[in-house]
Image (tube, rainbow, N blue to C red; front, top):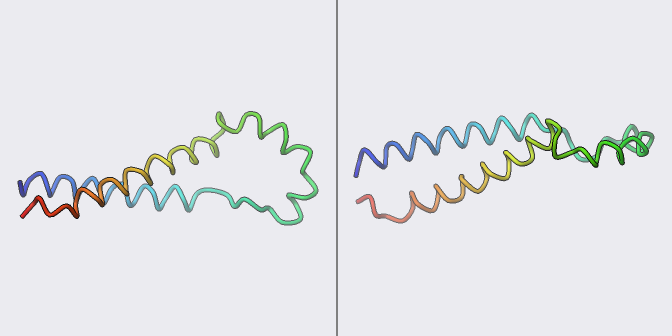
Length: 81
């Protein structure tokens, strides 16, 4: 059981690092004055957002956040002792 716990802890650490990096790489939602001026272009890019790098990072953030929560729950079940 100790080996399994160690493997899960390593996966947990990797998920934490990946989640931190992806969140820091994302752009903010409000672009300030630039966002107000370029509002027309936003509708075109909004249609293809799922295929862009920003859309991929949002999906990755959601998946990694779910993994983070699930692994946290598993590690705190006290089945390892």
